Amino acid sequence: MLLEQLKTRRSIRKYEHKEVEKEKIDIILKSALLAPSSMSRKPLQFIAVTDAELLQKLSLCREPGPRYLADAPLAIIVIADNTASDVWVEDASIAATFMQLTAHDLGLGSCWIQVRKRFRTEQETAEQYIKELMEIPEQYSVQCILSIGYPGEEKKPYEEGALKYEKLHFNKF
Ligand SMILES: Cc1cc2nc3c(=O)[nH]c(=O)nc-3n(C[C@H](O)[C@H](O)[C@H](O)COP(=O)(O)O)c2cc1C
Image (cartoon, rainbow, N blue to C red; front, side, top):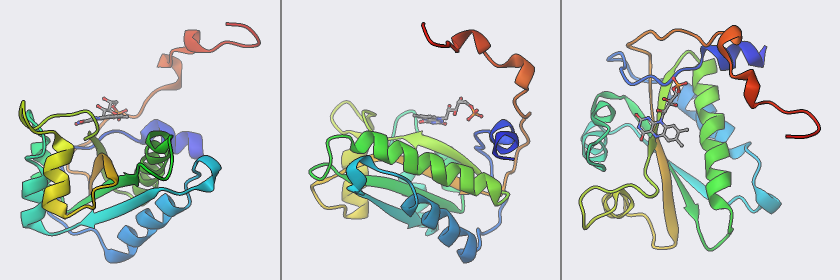
């Protein structure tokens, strides 16, 4: 049941030294292509990174940075053609979430690394650094990077009893 999967999904920032199989990478990427988008404009593209040197360089995209990315076997960069949709942020968020849930379903752990609106230095955004490093064309914006791998840490599942039910409203606020 999906709700059970949602309870056990946690952000995983430590990974086993083990490759993610190509078949699993393909399934995760396919899930991104299945995500809905506003007016079905599908402004997103995805860059899967398995090259250790690139992963190391990507881990320096922010300060303080996601250093765990350097030890991950896989990263997926989510980018959007910002001229194709005015709500690409929402589209990108949904696709990233689909990929995180699919990774979890495949026994993998993942973590969202925020790129949009984040800085590497006072002068340089995380996005500028990543676009130059990855040779991403000008009209694309970088939303986030997902680090993915076999979990090297255990985290407790969420408990239904601890959910903030007071945030739920019916009919009126
Ligand atoms: C929009 C968004 C941005 C996030 N940015 C980062 C980030 O830059 N670095 C990081 O380590 N985790 C990041 N996370 C992961 C959150 O810290 C994590 O989801 C939250 O602490 C709840 O933990 P859980 O995912 O285990 O439920 C982000 C999550 C979301 C949804």
